[in-house]
Structures are given as C-alpha cells and as structure tokens.
Image 1 (cartoon, one colour):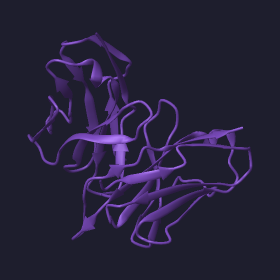
Image 2 (cartoon, rainbow over the protein chains, first blue to last red):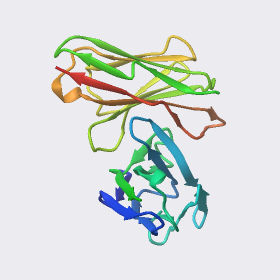
Image 3 (cartoon, each protein chain N blue to C red):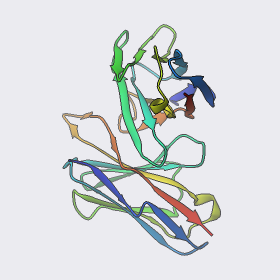
Length: 113
Length: 115
C-alpha cells in the first residue's frame, strides 16, 4: 500500500539556519503530496501542497518540490525562526484511496534563538 | 471564521466506560473524517463520512463507531475504551465534487486519557 517515510527527528537548529526535512513516498501513479504543520496543542494545518510532478509548493518561506524520479518531497526553508518550532508531517493522497491522507511519522523541529 | 471545532479538548475516561467525542464544522463540507494519533506517531484514518455514507477503514476496531446526524456534526463513540485507545483524536473535513476530494481542514483535536 501507499506509504510515506520521513526524516527522523528531533531536529534542533539555531535561528536563521537552513532547514531540510526529507520525505520520500511509495505509491502507485501520481499521488498528491502535502506538508502539514502541528504547533503544540493544536491540530494539523496545511503548510503546502503539490499535485503533480515537478510542481513546487510554497508558503511562509517553506518550499517543497514534487520529484517523481526520486519519489521525494523534501521540505526546505532558507532561514528558520523560533516560531517555526513545531512537528512537521509529510503526507500523500493516493489515486486509489483518494479520501485518505497517509502520513509520515512526523519530524519535531526546535529552533533556538 | 469558518472552522472545525472539537469538544472537549481534553477528555478523561475510565477503562471500559463509553465515551463520545464531538466535532462540528461551519465549512459546509460534505466529507468528515476521524483520525487517531497516538503519541509520537502519524495520524491514522479511522473512518469518514461522505454525506451520510459511512466508510470504515478495514483495520479500524469494532470498538470505534461514528454518527453523523447532520452536515455540521460528527461524533466518535468508543464503546469500551482500553488503555491502548489513549490518543489524540483529530476531526477533519473536506469537500468532494465531481469525484475529486479537496483539501482537508483539521480541528484542534481531543486528547483522550484512559485511566
């Protein structure tokens, strides 16, 4: 079945550092790909998405590019802030079970001032 | 603001005592989902409703039931909670049109503790 593998955390960085959180997936066809963010005590918020190969999703300085050839959707940000501290989930919505999001394990990110 | 609301935010129940979690939405979405998220794990879909049509995931235990009395509300019933059911329960909604499911919007979750 469909699956998502995410970089294990926790990840700790200093403010203004460059961030990469790796995400790879296994799915048939061309799934839609998502990054969700979960702040402490809150639900999941959609951060960005891409629905076809080579699409780049971007939001709040975060970017991720849908790479079909490497089945990847890595999250990047050029300069992180303390307010970016949260848990980040990579997810896919497959073409078969189109109603279901399949999530990776999540990566806890802590940014120190 | 249109939103997904979950009540209560924190729920404590006793082993074996039935408990109901509530979700409401003001988005007028026709699809509502319940996910279970155990500590430090990924959210896992339990079931979803498309309008009044109930769709259970194959590996969702029978202990978990759901009701959707109208478009706005959806309930998660745990008939006999076990210690292993302690988790965050996330409600989400989306719209479906022309066979296509759109973005899911999540509520803040209800954290369930089983004593």
